Amino acid sequence: MNSKSTSKSGQSVHNCVKTIQALNTRLGQPPNLAKRAKRWQFNAAGLALDMRRSAISDESLSEVLSLAKDRQIAQKIAGLIAGEPVNNTEQRAAHHSALRAIFDDSLSVSALEARGVFQRVCELANRIRQQLWHGFSGKPIRDVVNIGIGGSDLGPRLVCAALDDGAAQNSNAPAVHFAANIDPVELNRILRNCQPETTLFIVASKSFSTQETLENAKAARRWLLNSMQKADLAKHLVSISSNVEKATRFGIAAENIFPMWDWVGGRYSLWSAIGLPIAIAHGAEAFEALLRGAHAMDTHFASAPLEENLPVLLAALDFIHINALGAASVAVLPYAHQLALLPDYLQQLCMESNGKGVDRQGNRIDFATGPVVWGSAGTVGQHSFHQLLHQGSEAIPIDFILPLQAPHNAAHAEDARHRQLVANCLAQSKAFAEGKSVATAKQELLGGGASEAEASRLAPHKASPGQRSNIIIAMDSLNAGTLGALLALYEHRVYVQSILWDINAFDQWGVELGKQLGGPIDAALADNNTSPGSDEITNSWIKKYQSLNAK
Ligand code: F6P
Image (tube, rainbow, N blue to C red):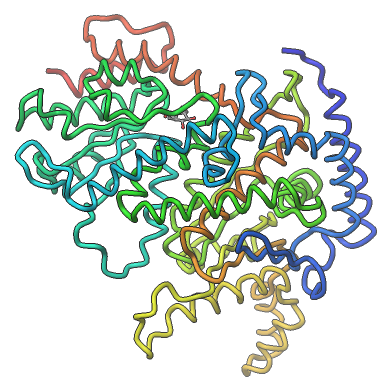
């Protein structure tokens, strides 16, 4: 690795940051967020983006766009969509957009391959939903368990939950479960309510070499073999993998393996056969609508002018937050319980993509890159961490996600809960931007009958500084189409961030070290007679483990 502290690409980030900071000092830092009614609203692919209460300004946007143009953003967007090898450390494309371009008239080679697999996925899902796929005893499948982790889990897990609005479900559709953790408790909790004869496992692993997935798959196979012959396994195991050879060696019938490709990254793969659980739980039409929604966002991303391009605008805002205003984390607050898993999903998408410390050439960089992404469903967080968001010492930028229509029409006329959910979201956005001054707090206290002394004492505690930059991403209703567009929006936002920072968003070398070290430690834990390695801290825990788990 080149050890230069400030590379050429780093220098342009610093210059841009300096200019924005100088602008902010002149305009107020960030520009007054409470009174910007006219501009900063955009629409695309069924989503409405409201940036009126965000730290963006015409001047700062123009600075970030000039950095983006220096980085040849237009060519880079086109390269991504065309399937060029944008992942330069692995010489691979990141062609997830091809997975949702499969309904177009003229198809790229990747999209053509993807279309064939999509059709197979839908056929299998339909067979299962119509109770035409039978287990070894002749009974239809009642439970489907997806075994996978990271990108082979988080996407389909999120979408399956996001499309479940709590209304009555198709009684023929099986229950779909997800097991990711190597901790046996997760899979055991699922299997205690399942019967082997009516359970189908999906072993989802692009590499088919991920420890957690392989160990859980072995546990599932043991569980099945307690009740059936080896020859019956084909009725209970399917796999999604780019490593067909390994999946076959594991014992999965060749016709039950759905391929993946090197040109799709794990965290960008929910649009591939990895989405099988979505088609099983919600139907092939829902899976298709999801892909079409994402494709609509791809089309917008590839064609809209930079000044109106949603992923570009959001990445520019991120740059302003992270690099010019020093934000170290971003909160994502979906005001829709169906999207409660969105922050978990975004953690992998954003942090595995842009949690990087070197630029594309390997130069160490000396500016901030991917922030910590966190959050939870509103209104639950209001009774927990919102205190810090309102009055804490750090101003944390916030993304609100807001579907406006109540999830289903069956709600009772007296049921005000969804309306109140929306009211809470709008109130939080306003409160974060406008805050409450000490003088107003004092007036309120006096108006409530407090003495002058009491009002002066309490007012600073009751005041909120405001000026918390926040955006609302709204949609008329949360459905497969708008969800697809939302997820594609975040994918492309992450890509544009990486262009601004000149980093590779599509590798994840950092996760390897822990995996490398885990092997010898596991071997030492397993073997009571093996003297563990030379590291005293690890050794002390190995010995403790061995004493507590002696056989
Ligand atoms: O270890 C990280 C990672 O490689 C992710 O990038 C990926 O989504 C996950 O593991 C699972 O990988 P696989 O699908 O190959 O099992």
